[in-house]
Amino acid sequence: MSKEDGKVVAMRVDDAEGDMRLDRWFRVHFPEVGYTYLQKLLRSGQVRVNSKRAQANDRLNAGSEIRVPAIVRQPKKTGGSVGSGLKAPLGVSKGDRDAIERMIIYEDLYVLVLNKPFGLAVQGGTGTKKHIDGMLEGMADRFGGERPRLVHRIDRDTTGILLVALNREAAAKLGKTFQTRSAAKTYWALVKGVPKPTQGKIEAALVKASGPDGDRVRKALPGEQDKAMHATTHYSVIDRVGQKAAWVSLKPVTGRQHQLRAHMHMIGHPIVGDNKYEGDANMPAENIDKKLHLHARRLIIPHPKTGVDIDVTAPLPEHMRATWDVLGFDAQKFGDDDA
Image (cartoon, rainbow, N blue to C red; front, side):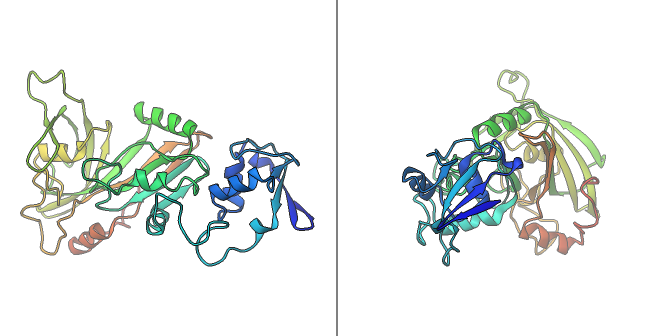
């Protein structure tokens, strides 16, 4: 609801928007208004709440009236955002912003879910200049001004679901959910050979072991219990190609580094394309890309605000879709309950 007053509109805060931050309210109603420009409007008094000056992080009450100047309501010009011209904010390029936008498969005021592509690191490290954490930090204006926070991590070459919290409170609650193992994660992978039995549980503690191809993990040996990390994975074969390869569903109970990759290697069925765990040699068929065939397919987790389950599914990356076509697998044949 709004009422006109010359070039200013007073917009009423709906009941469902009570307790929403002012910057988030602008993100919902005027997504083209960048956070920096909103701060300028607030400092100059052009944006007010109930006729009073306000801060970007002020919490709104249902029924409050927000003063919105005409310059904000004008249709934006091609590209860019209101008040920012055509340039992206410092710290992130327009190409990076567009890349993040393409990854988004779920978004609300508290949670962001990305479908991470192959080869992009989640966090920085030695020699890693471009990573999702840095890209998101440079887009704080896009997500209400607060720095988006990673809730968990997946490997650079693993694709699929990556959960991000959009405020500190959501990050704390989601982090606790992961720590208590209340998040249900499902991965899809292509492995060499066919595991027997076709359903099972792998329980093997892991220890870190560096090598010529970088960090990896291996099964803990007797006497290494003090530094071993308990790890449990459930697996199930969904489809197969003779005895050459199998499409498997993997459900980690724990979340150790390289857990799924190391566990499948330990039982003699490395993930296809895995150059750290002998999955990139003797491919099961011609014309299969040597990229890692491991995809974070599905996540079910209680929403940090409402408690209602978020249930998201990420489509397969291009190289795995191509492999599924080569091997005759039908990703649409099996519902998520079956996989």
